[in-house]
Amino acid sequence: MTWLERLDRRWIFLVMGLLVLGPLLKPLYLPLTVTKHVLNFRDAIDRVPNGSTILMSCDYDPGSIPEMVPMTRTAMRHLLSKNCKVVITVLWPAGPGLVDSVTRRVAAEFPGKRYGVDWINLGYKAGNEAVMVVMGQGIANAFPRDYTGAETRSFPIMHNVRDYTSFPLLVNISAGYPGTKEWVQQVQARFHLPMVSGCTAVSAPEYYPYLQSGQLLGLLGGMAGAAEYEKSRGEQGTATKGMDAQSLGHVFVALCIVLGNLARRARPGEEPR
Amino acid sequence: MTPHLTMDFGTWVAAFLTLCAFSFLYRDNPFYKLAEHLFVGVSAGYYIVLNYWTVIWPNLLQPLGKALHGQGVDATRTGMFAAELGDYRGWLLLPGVLGLLLFTRLFGKIGWLSRWPLAVIIGVYAGIKTTGFAQGDFVAQVQASLQPLLLPSPWLTFSAIVFLVGLVTSLLFFFFSREHKGALAVASRTGMYFLMIGFGAGYGFTVMSRISLLIGRFQFLLENWLGLR
Image (tube, rainbow over all chains, first blue to last red; front, side, top):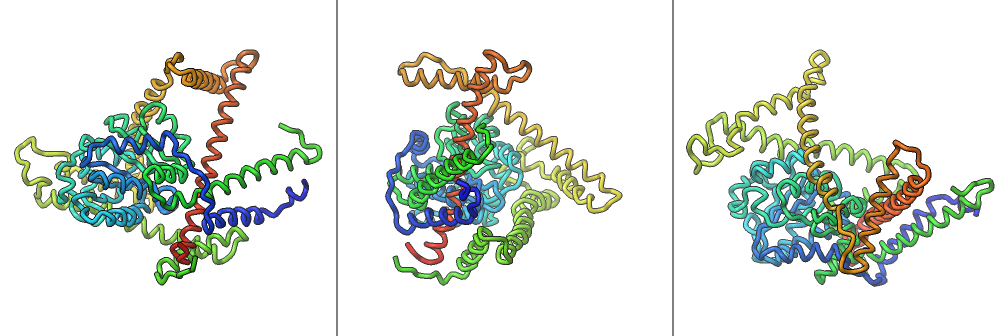
């Protein structure tokens, strides 16, 4: 086992790289089961009356594209297919351009949908929780201009939007702070706005208590959550394509943990703890 | 799968910088440093421009300018009590001045003035966070923890019992007012196992996030750059 202790970690990087690359070039089509929380996320959107106006806060930046973008795409498609109007906000500074390009591409799949009528990107605003609180006094107060710099109040979609009472549901796609936790604390708890969340895998364990308490109606956790959501909607996006690589990567990490522990125990004079 | 290399210049730049960043996995090198320094410089410039055009201009300078010129927010609303929040735009002078005071740190003698806006920022955020935590986390989570133990299905009853045992023993693990001996030691050790299961789940989710990042970069290189779809 001493060779394991002397192993250059770059070999581990190489094996991990190959295990991730392989299934992307030649998919294995491993089975994927849709879990309850993902179905609840989908059902919460399904229950919203057709034609409603939905608040979708996309709180992420390019650092979390693989997990957040597939969720945003599927949720946006889901909402537009129900003829819902979507009001998009971004609380991460490096997010608005990315979110705009993703949502514009999805909206282009629906020929009749027009910017400012069926969806709007209000862009970024600094202030984290303070922005959420100000939005409760008026969405246009916090976002007087949209992402393109035009007067927010001038768009038809905003004529019926005043504050949180204008929305039956908040869809939050969150990569950390500010994100789901802050929306639950500042908006769901104060304004009782029903909410669903799609988040990075690393932050998912923190949000499970909100599911159990009913503060979140549904939760997509990381790439697996995004892939399950895609499957539940009959789509095959980038998250679904990445799941084989994800599974092999996890098996390799588990193997490394087992081997690492065996090597440590085999070390002479090492007491098991 | 036949490669169809993209002709998009931006994609080539992104692919080059991705490979520069990956090169750090072998060892630190000038290509990695180039990508790192470029990222820091571009980010700093981007944040300054973004905050000016999305916050300082639309939320401060423009409404203040309109207010000083006597332009109303909503022309259809008239009368003494017709004002909505945005009509109190004259008060924006106050945050404007406080914002400027932050820059007094750059001038030694009057640097102490920057403590006033910092005090406002800390006070406001402490208030917002405290009430948010109390409403969203503390009360709601305590309420959700009070569950009935006898439920229609045996599986649900079992889950509720596991939940109760996990909750109580995990809390007892953090009870340090008495030495962990006897029944308290058993309970706190049980709590520790529940916590370890929680940490394990957290670690698994973290691994998933990190592998997702690698998958995302590989998908970008294969599909967007090399055109292997």
